[in-house]
Image (cartoon, rainbow, N blue to C red; front, side):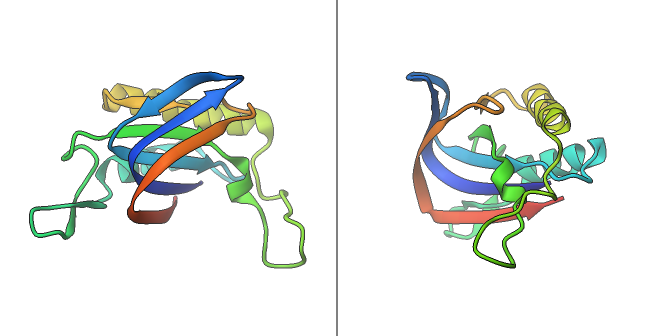
Length: 145
């Protein structure tokens, strides 16, 4: 599982003209599920999302996590993160999970995140989404399970 996190001042997801998920300060997490991912990968990634220290403390050092700043978490499925890009000029997607399994694991991540943290929003799996954000820093990291 690959998750690209961006520290944001705000972020939102729009599908068919309707805002379906939005947060203020927190993390926008673009989630790519890969072929060999499992339930254990979901658990590991959720722990990272809630505990990864990317927010500044009083001295300006990245020592605080999402929970410590009472931030929001916006989870957005993005299978293109599983693309193979090392060769050629066109991405390959053979390492991405099959759609049904990708949806199952993404939904499991959403459900577990909502159980563990009160401020979780989400996009819509497989939909054409427009994602807007105000990147804070910018601070962006690629997390892998």
